[in-house]
Length: 353
Image (cartoon, rainbow, N blue to C red; front, side, top):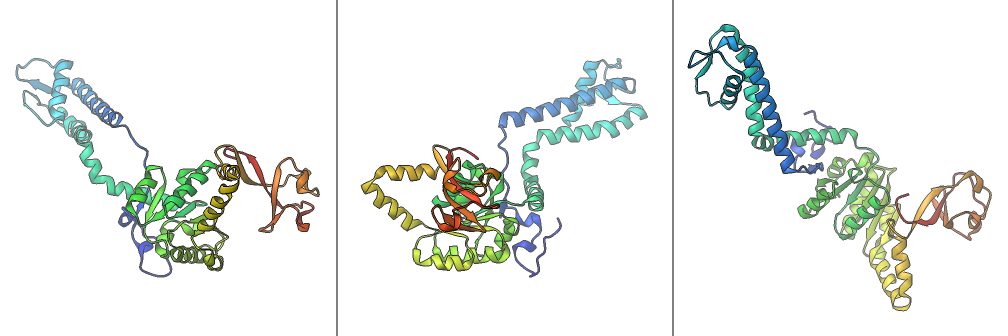
């Protein structure tokens, strides 16, 4: 396997793809054991049939113990004992042409037959090579994907939200150090990378340089800051959203390169406080944060017919206008008129957009 090299020598990204097996895991489609066994039995029967036909067509070159001409049943019998390497010797090729056919056709069929029968063992032996090839192919084609750092409660919820909003599991890469978390992510069809997300080599393995969005859902604020710094250094254009526990670290996350910062403790505290007075408000907020049902907050481009008008006069309930990367709330003087290139933050019916 060829190596992926970076400017600074050393590190995981310099390793050949086969050395990354166990670090990078590509999800596989679950196969039914019955179907797998049935497919192998079918290939074995095909090999047996082809062998019996070849022997029968060249039956004059064979002799059985009774010195009688071979029937198709004799040919089938000879093929079965030959392919299974039993070889009783009661039917043998006696002419040069028959022996040549044995060398050219029967021997490869015997090998194929044995491979099919012991396929499970061979599959285990070749699993490392297959994974290395899959890793190489994935690294060559991965682009515009989403990376989720940390697959705890926040990370899993973020992934669920991305998928519910139309994202594909195959376009999501989870980076974590916890084997249990990685196993859970792989079970849901996500690509996983085992390692410390604060290290550039690990993030490069996840394809951070090609990612369109990065979700930082680490359990510690210092880890979140370092992971954000590392990701922003490698990819200056990706959208980085991060979750932290303490509000006092918000400015550190912003300085580290995060586009959006969510303070989990304060957000939960506000909802708890609101719930003591108006519980229905909390239900509405949860509804807005669940894209798969009810209502959801979404963003869309401005339609030509809406240009020059007020956000309040559009067909949707507009909450804000994003202009040149900055969010303006409805009612602010800067967005009294919608301009070309604006994007509207609005409430839409739940479900993938």
